[in-house]
Image (cartoon, rainbow, N blue to C red; front, side, top):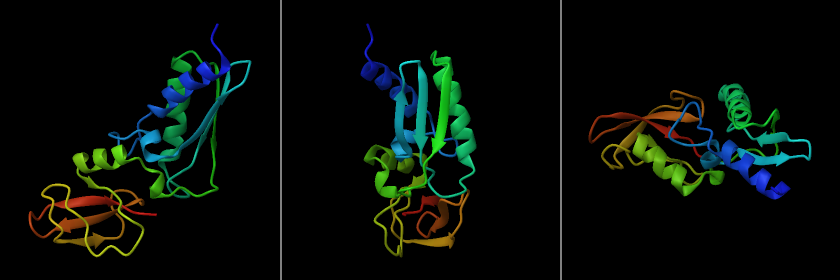
Length: 158
């Protein structure tokens, strides 16, 4: 017989493996936005997710992807709740997520502080400058490396 905690563990694992739609090299668990996954005795799964920022357009896709992944695994009743408090912070990202972002060409967030330079994910140089406060998404800024001259996204620290 499967216990409730084993079931919850399986549902959590499925939810944790859902990739972020904007940065598919990291999962929602890697980003730290997956807050909780619970299941009741009737097989209903409740997932709590915190957006990286209020109004994040990826949340609708993440919700659909969670429902799809869990129903494909046999769960018949899945609901997703967006939890806004406490607000997400880049401190919730795993070190593995930061390494995956860097390998993908996105500079991971550093400590929350004024950033005068960001290490270029292509060549490793710190001789970089911010080109635009907003990059391909609102949670990233656009930077340019003065050494290799390549533009890159930087995941903003919050």
